[in-house]
Length: 333
Image (cartoon, rainbow, N blue to C red; front, side, top):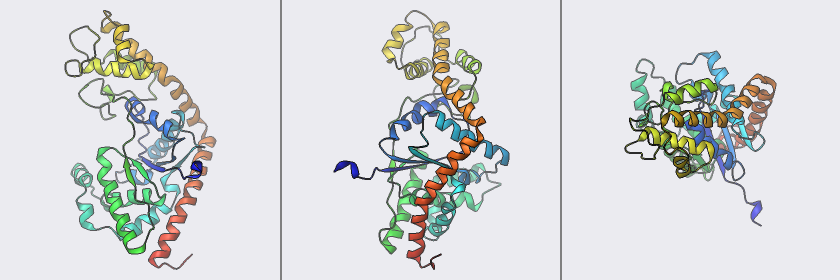
């Protein structure tokens, strides 16, 4: 009987930066929507991770909710996925302390991200920044996750998470599922409109389109997009990075192939092409932006989603913590 097999579980921790970009939508989020039927997915807004860098409290609160609204507007279904806020499930902090006692100081000091971040924030190197990977391991192991979608920058943290889990299992038997890094099918790789040799990133706002940008803003950004001094709309990454990026975006927004897009603008020049890409993106994002704006105003609905999400997550997390506490010798509550 095949259908009784447990679906594999995916855990994804999302920093509440609030502003989702066209790049993150076309590159990743669009594909997550396809995962929700194949896997058990947990999407966690990791506000506890966010405070390793000093936050403005009102902004953090607002961004956590905006992020949730934008994910739902992108098509992640709160019934099919468990969507919750990390600080609402105390088990994350509880398991993190225990795992910290099974993590070596040396392992944490070798983390590349810690080295980079402590250089960036030399005046504020907190123990939270240092033990960040332990909390991340707790996030993943709490839910017995099989797969963790990660970018290259977080791969080392998943490896450490596996090491901690193996060490714990080696002492106490089979407690934790060993997670695998999951490199999801990537959609279009979207580059910056201002510097097409770099990935689109919110650190370069001129070259970045946000899901919540107004149609006028989007139009303006595409008009100013960097191209080259020729006029031919041709895909050639080496010699025409700007135009190639715009073709990639146009093709992802309209569902046309690159060849169809080249044919459509043959002999038309950038004056026609750039606004057309802008318009295609405006139409792609319009329903997402409108739905996200509607959800952000509906505080009661969002509250219902994250409260139910936390309850569902806590039920799973509590089982893990109970098992761990019993194994290490804590008196049962």
